[in-house]
Structure formats: C-alpha cells, structure tokens
Length: 393
Image 1 (cartoon, one colour):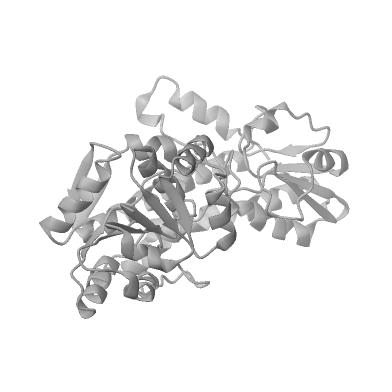
Image 2 (spheres, one colour):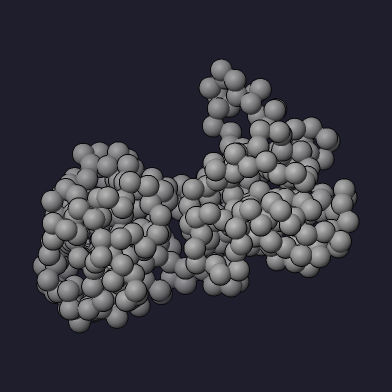
C-alpha cells in the first residue's frame, strides 16, 4: 500500500482515501470500528458525502482501496496519514496528549523511512510533541502537518480544488508531504508546523465568529420586530463588501465551536471575540424558546423539530444544536417530536409526516432543501427561511 489512513473510515479519512484511490494510489483505511470497515469493504459509504458513493464502489472494485482493523497494515505503507484530532473535554479544555498517545499506540507498527502526516485539527505544539515521540523511539520518520480544509459534504470537490497547506520541520518532510498532496492538487502552500496549526484554528474560529455576528444581528432585528433576512438581502444586493454575510442559523458541528475554544485555551483564555461568539451561537436555541414562550403556552403544546443534523443535506448529528433545542423544549413543552430524512442513527426520530400531523408548532432545526416542499398547517419558527416567509419569531 502507498497510503494508510489511521482513523480512515470517518468523515475526514474516508473521503481522503477515496480521493487518493481515484487518482490511482493504493490506499488502506485503518479503523477500529469493525462495522464501518465491513461497510467500506462492501463498497458502501457509512455516511453521506456528496459524490463519494459511486467512486468508493469503483475504487474498492478495482482493488485500489481496502479497509482494515488490523494495525499491522500500517507497517506496509510508504505514507501514514493520521486523521485523529485534538478533542476538548466537557469543560471545553483541549486534550493535547490525545494525538501523541494515539501515535504511541501504533508506534510498534511504524517503520523507518515512512512519512507520517498529521491531518486533523491540532492544538498548537502537538506536531512538535509527535516529533518528540518519534525521536524518543529512535525512529527515522518524517513528520508533517497538512490540515484538512474541506467542508463536510463537499470533500470530493474541495480535495481537488482547494490549495493544500503543507508543513514540516525539515525540507525533507515538507517536500515528501508536498509530493504526496500534489497527487490531488497543484496548489500547495508551505508553512512551518506551528503556522499551519494556527492557520487551521484561525480558519474555523473566523467562520464561527462570522456566524455569531449574523446571529447577533438576527437577534437585534428580531427584538425590534424586523425581519433579518429581508435586511440581509437588501444590504447585500449588488454590494460586494456585504455579500459574505451569512444568514441566521445554528452554528454547530464537530469543528467550529471546538476549535474556537482550543484557540482560546492556547491564548490563556484571552479570546474575547471567540467567547462572545460562543455565547451568541450556543445561546440561540435558548433565545428562540424564550421568544416562542412570549407567543405560546408551550406547556400545553406538542412541538416538532424538522432536522436534527448539524447542517443541511447531512446525516451528521455531532454537536448539533437541534439536540440542544430538543432538551430545552422537553423541559418547557408538553411533548417534542423530532425528524430528519437523512439521520438514520437515532431510533427516537419519527417521520416528517408524523411531525407535521401531530405538532402544534414546528421549529426548523436543519435547513434541508426538501423541507421547502412541505406545507405545515401550524405556526412555524424558521430562522433559516426554508419556507421563504421570513425569519421573525
């Protein structure tokens, strides 16, 4: 195998493996999840990713991609890509040791001469920690950090179109990483590892703060009885400097909030914009429920939530604020019903039709395009403007 991807059956690793395999490289995706491994080896995607299903079936059928839960496959690869990132705990503290410990767990399977590429978000300084793990083990392995930059659902396009940031402590490490990723794109940007680590965190924190700004604007407009979406479209019309203002909505998912908190921790919790963004974005479900309670007696109502994924046209519920909304409503309303046509992992979800038939009030949690064809006969809270009737609550 030319490439082994550790943690390779997930949302970051599998699209990357498919992309390399589609360019003729032999890839093994190594994962501890036996069910996901079996699914991938059958040529089936274990999650939704636009444009990936057909390509996966092709590369598996051609013998260019295989999945395995046997760690010995790591020793056979020229290039080892690790897609394990830095998590945060329940108190929002980063766990910088997570990636070095993951490397130590597979250290016996790493061999001299390999290129080890760290791919997921890293707390600043973790690349250096991994280099020390390799050095203490007496291994001659080049270490690079090449952060993934894709938006979930667009991997099969963006892996080939977006420039790739490549970093390594030595010219040899950076050069090997650049050669590897030139298989996917000719647009390469070289930095130091620490610059690349911050580039990834800055990117996600910037997006998170932009969403928080839009949500704060929404709250201001809404509190004065005005429709934020009307205002946003008016100010952006043929006015380039305002056309990147996002709509209001839940800013969630496994990366933006987490990485903003990592950046805050790195700067000794001196990140006022990041913390303010967290308060706005994480507070939006509570704000919506408070506004709803000003109009309705929730204690006597069944409330339906349409969309439990963290973003449109996705089956990924990780850190979805729809679930936070659900917990709040379960305390305030008589009953809560939830549905999502993409999510298949939550047995408590019911069909959209049941939500429409039994709810006294509906809240749009995720702006799936299919919802626009629905015709609710009860009041709707639609901060995404899926139904095109404005976003006032």
